[in-house]
Image 1 (cartoon, each protein chain N blue to C red):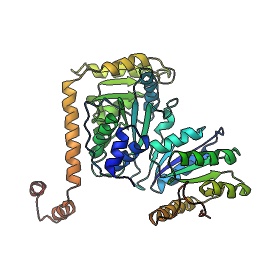
Image 2: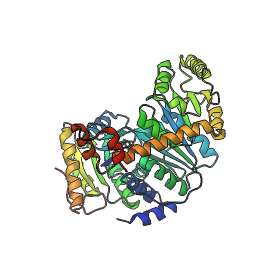
Image 3: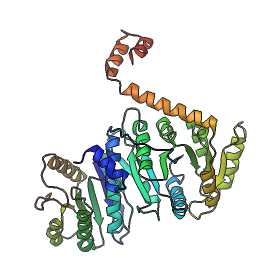
Image 4: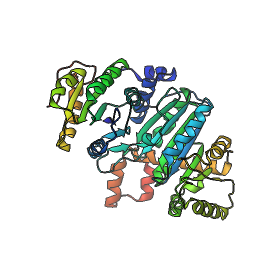
Length: 145
Length: 285
């Protein structure tokens, strides 16, 4: 799978994002890392140009509530409804439901095992094959637990 | 899913998403037919950490001012163990975010038999036919497969770091024979002048003096103007053109061999000694 790992917003701490890129690479995926401080518009352009299957967003600054739904919305507008969105970093439990409602399919907090993220990508590729909704613009409901 | 011909038409008419999808299809074996006239291509290669992506970023700003449309194919190696790849060249091309005039595409070299050579030419053709006037192919200049990818460009820029050891590595890989322009990057670092001098003296040992050499800093912009005009004025070298064509031919030949349907059977026969190497070669058509 081609996966873009992006850091939206102003927070500059990307150790976590870099660990995830490594984990996904070792899991056999092609990972494109955007670097820090990307705007939603930049992230959507990168997804288009790289023909990505999935987007992983890392947020530690607390701006996830604003930025992640905005990125999801822009992806749908740009016709990227079939691209899968997952998130990681510091995202409080109370915000999970609204992010799932915006189209995010998984949220990985601190302490997540790397195998879990690989398993998630296996699950979504199987869901895709079966034609079940997984993309950011497809029917909301299913998310990874 | 759109058909390939629909996607191709949309891509040729400037649709970015279709262009990106066509490039993916080419990676998995689609061979588009497009008519193009002389795509403008530059191969940029050199050891890891020499500053290739940063330098490409600096060159892109120059091309933008001239109104060119620039596409970059950034090739990174795939892990032979997992098959995965970390594609992070775009981070270094700062100030060159994707825009109507810049297209950056990361490519994993994958474990394709015969490497990327089977499809890099198709990618160049589609990009050129879609209006991209400057096409850059970036690879790590180590190993034969990488050399062969860069040989698909019509002009080749070799980027060196300020450490003399890098240049020896490049000579080993045979890339120096292919390069039209060699630049030592990071002139802001202490050893760079030394590296530049030793590069010039090692090149002067060759009869071939038509290689132009530069000392630049992609970081602060020193020497970039001169390098840029060298690239734009790069003369065609018949001698290097022959070496490039040879590399292209060899890589396609390799691909054909590695994709030969009876390869495994031949290898088994060879391993048991039931046929000889010469007989095996004769059997491959």
